[in-house]
Image (cartoon, rainbow, N blue to C red; front, side, top):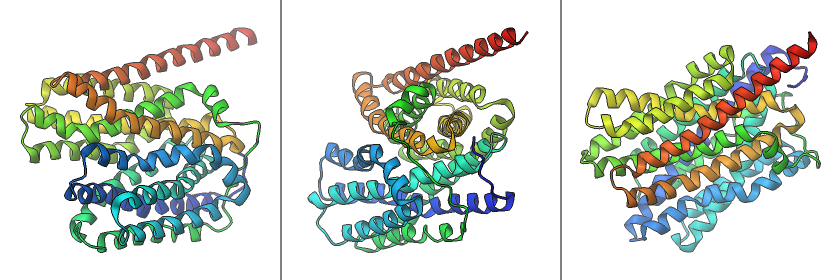
Length: 396
């Protein structure tokens, strides 16, 4: 994709630094979500308002997204990252001293806008610095790091508690420390350029399968993360077992990404994307059938979690395969916006379906989402094979 002349050691050091910089940010984000929800619940805030509050980050990313490629191109990724981290730290500390309503809404929106630049820059750099031979594996390591950070966030919150200013201070410290690895990147700072003729919407038209995979990944992942424990409780599962189901789903997010990335580098990312879609479909279909069977349920949740998150890993790696270096920033921005759209709408639509059908609404909606992506993936693979056969015939 790119012809940037860095040594293998420089690329390796830069990639490790970039991936390491995500750890603190994701731990902080993984802690602030339940922290704010708990504090608002203790104040007697209506559930719908807590849900709206949780959507502030995604809304911020989608708001600033169309402007990010131009901002990154004009000011440079490093300056945008340093500024964004500083703003996010200040906003987090202000949450500790300002009244929740309405200031927390505004501050959480500001945090989302501030950290969006790091998110886009990180994935763009990874795509630029990797090759088709190792992109899946490296992107899997990045995805695994993010999933682990989300898991650690609530654990940090358990240690700090949810009262007082301490949890906000710790979250701010996690975000602030994240800048340290980037200081060791050295000269390996790929430019995320922007060309006016390459718009986000043009990117979406050029890569419909990648964008659909992003939307479905966000839709499925956040729906399961948010609604699975509620569905389990409705089906008579004990609370501690319902929470364990979420942990098993997340463990698949973490531990299956590297194997998926390694296999995808060898067999091709489109093929493994289809395989992950099939497993995601199977998870949605089989959940009602095995929910009372402990061992099959645990295996299903582990594989389901790995495949749903694998959709994100594979599709973001496909951006690097599909686009040139100068278009990667715009493509990653479009990808993240679509992913956040899926993450925001997924729990809402799934929740509405659960109100209509108490036992099957959850599985039906997730099944439909996986089916849409499966059909699109098979169509794209068939089209690609026909194009390859046509090229071979013309050469002969």
